[in-house]
Image (cartoon, rainbow, N blue to C red; front, side, top):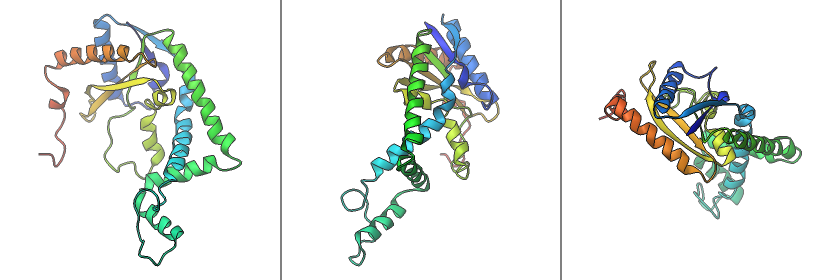
Length: 241
């Protein structure tokens, strides 16, 4: 089995503990007989920007149906308000801050005069990412990377900085953009905070068996190395029973 490490999904911005555990997992795969090669997917650097144009655009289009009249929640309908006012009250109450942010961004990207510049360009980037994957899979059977550049952050910790929060998606977005197989499994606990580190495995479309084969072999090897499930080593969460 030839396994490719994606050059663009490591290095600057990745937590040291994440990289260490990822490399330890790679060592286990080598022990199992895997051949490791480095592959370059140059258009991955544009994946995050493209995704956050395409996804909000689809979000804006799909959620337009929730008008409080035909679909979804209805708020403030006491008989004294018009349809537009009820719709406004319902969307204020029913959509959270992040959903509203994405609807507004998506509506802007799809608006007249901006469609080709934003949504259209993002779809072209999507095609380039697919081609990067196709070229990479000519050199190896599966691709691997850390699942995220850091371990999990606390709920609400990055709510005031959505861009920083979005950056944690940087390693998993290309898979979703290309429509190929992807899975994640824990590969250890980061030294800095004792939190789990994810190991992502990617396979060509309709070749999910490769992904499961590598994932199953790595999971068994790590379990044998640890002696017990990784969660038994993880720190107890505050307030847990």
